[in-house]
Image (cartoon, rainbow, N blue to C red; front, side):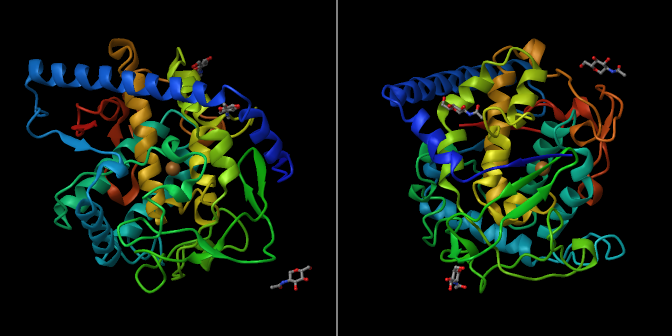
Amino acid sequence: MKVSTIIAGLLPLASLIVAAPGCNDVEKVASKKIDQLQKNYQKYIEATIKKRQTGCTSKNILRRKEWGKLSKKERTDYIEAIYCLNRKPGLTPRSEIPGARSRWDDFVGSHIQLTPVVHANGFFLAYHRFLIWEFERALREECGYKGTQPYWDWTLEYEDQTKSTVWDGSPSSLGSNGVYVANRSAISVRLPTETLVFPPATGGGCVQSGPFTADKFTINLGPIGYEPKGPEGGLGFNPRCLTRDFNPELSRTSLRPSNITALLDCPTYACFNRDLDKPNRKPGFGVHGAGHFQFGTVQLDTFISPSDPAFWVHHTQLDRIWTIWQNQDPAVRTYALWGTQTTGNFPPSANVTSDTPVPFGHISPPIPLKNLQSSIDGPHCYIYE
Ligand SMILES: *[C@@H]1O[C@H](CO)[C@@H](O)[C@H](O)[C@H]1NC(C)=O
Ligand SMILES: *[C@@H]1O[C@H](CO)[C@@H](O)[C@H](O)[C@H]1NC(C)=O
Ligand SMILES: *[C@@H]1O[C@H](CO)[C@@H](O)[C@H](O)[C@H]1NC(C)=O
Ligand SMILES: [Cu+2]
């Protein structure tokens, strides 16, 4: 087992390199390129759904927006719908996940049960695409939410996440950093193929301000991904505050516009999937891992990561990047296949095919992979604005 230690002292060096002169121009050019590719994708989708007249039309398509483009009212409506799911009784049997209580926990529970089979493999993007779709459906149909699932484009604030209206701790944000806790020890995250060590960063305690402080929101499951685990291996009832530990170095080095354009330039689906995760960690984390790890604590624990609203706006951003990549060459890329059926192919498993059922635990019966790959076919009908 390889041990990759992320030595805090190395990170400032990385930021020196990326802060070289001319660098902001590089990022501006990259941002423009993403905007242009997103416009091309939007045009393609609008033209396609008009022509085909399938169930997904320009009238009923859900239009997902970037957090910053939502009005304050739209933001607080979304937050109210999250409270609703977090308080509504769940469907997961206690015999399987004894600590699950709410509809929110049903989504966390699906992710807990399936973490060993839906990451860094052929199911990864499709599983998360449908998980978000079901989450958005539950917010709308079970909680009366009239909006759509927002995404957070972390490239907009990669130099300082706390500048974002998503994390400024105001009543219309998704909460702040955690309270700074001194003298914490590093967190060792054991993945099937390696162990990642995260030294403490800028917070570590309960979210300080905004809608997700301990008096308004609690999480019930885990920890599972690192020690000490919660009761019953992390599946037991463990109500506690939501914690965060913002790590600005990760965001500065790995969540820049140029990190997205590098992905969008991938010629194959294999390249796209591998670079999302950068399995050899050279030169750093891919945007999938970095987007989680920048929040520390709960977002270091893959199993329970959907416990934090941060998971949903981050994964919706990843899904957006995937749709833009697909629609640069929709005929070839929409139904492209890559990867096996176990996380990081550990233990080794068969390659996925178009017909391989993707599992969802208590969220949904399994669904053939090919039905989940398009954003406008199968169950899905949404567009990124
Ligand atoms: C943290 O550790 C330092 C050095 O070991 C010690 O001086 C300090 O009192 C500790 N602070 C807390 C809050 O435990
Ligand atoms: C992210 O982009 C920066 C600047 O282009 C680059 O230095 C860094 O290596 C990239 N990170 C990864 C993980 O590719
Ligand atoms: C799985 O796919 C890879 C290429 O994506 C290929 O090299 C490998 O032979 C395939 N494995 C099987 C068992 O078909
Ligand atoms: Cu996941």
